[in-house]
Figure (tube, rainbow, N blue to C red):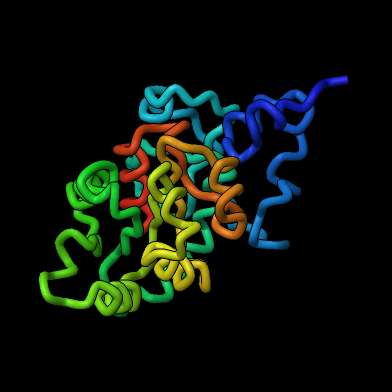
Length: 233
């Protein structure tokens, strides 16, 4: 009998699930962590893995092209990623007529000059309009008030899950306020960076129940490229 690799490798990673000899046949039908219930995603077609996916070192058994992918795009997605991002895309399309920022970037204070700034720069290089506290919360302005305004005026939120954020979340900091607002609707994409979903689940099971993107499977630059494609209208 094939032995499940979940105790060692976990199943939050699409590549880990796909390579598990015991669970790969049923992964995606009943993962135990999905927050979307019986949601049925729109149809999409399979396509070969792109050079970007191969360069990340991820070993995925299949790749798909989502409905929002533009002609000529070289980006490919796992079926798990498409299921996770489709409800977010639907909310983007509902709010397309509003004059909003594309993305609200939620991050730990400790990451503001590191990974958060790097992700912000990758996104802006692809013409994504990002609300980022380092530039949008001016001196003398209440940070909480600035965050409220940023959340209200952004189509979706992305939360950069790093070891620093995992340390901050238990203290119910400003990051916790941002997450509470984003979790209230299908407007949140977790980006797991330099940590794991298993570690996140120990701190915030609710946030860990939302599938997203992980730099364990692809580079932060490639993650930014997928986010830019997701919000493009």
